[in-house]
Image (cartoon, rainbow, N blue to C red; front, top):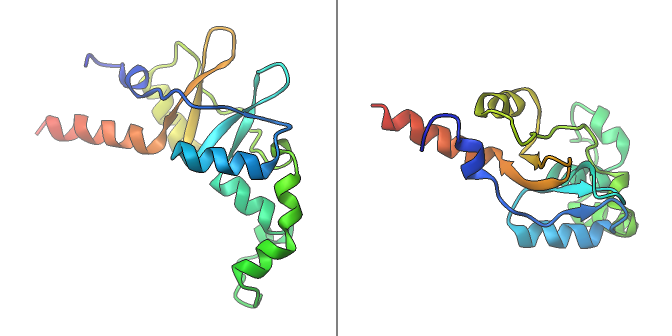
Length: 155
């Protein structure tokens, strides 16, 4: 593999979620994909954001949880929380998606991708084609493994 081609080698073709899709259906697709998150597109098929593990936790737990330093004083079991928030499974994914526009363009370098993983709290980076549509994703874990292989090959 020649230098600066990690991104091309690591792009995974994945299903995309629609912003109006129900959370319950989206979670099933994410679990089936084996990835921690999937890209979300709007009605024009442009990148809307990302929905995954972190966003589902945000959908299940009320907003004030994000402000707490500790939830030790809250006695609820996870099953109680899910039971209280079951209605969120019918909410649109777009309500909870991370809409920070973190994506790699078709001409992005591996260094730009590394910088994105370093400075953003994302587990996947959608890769867009020339028209701005989702072409696939690169996962942080795949990128780490590829970097690790490159590093250890140099010993």
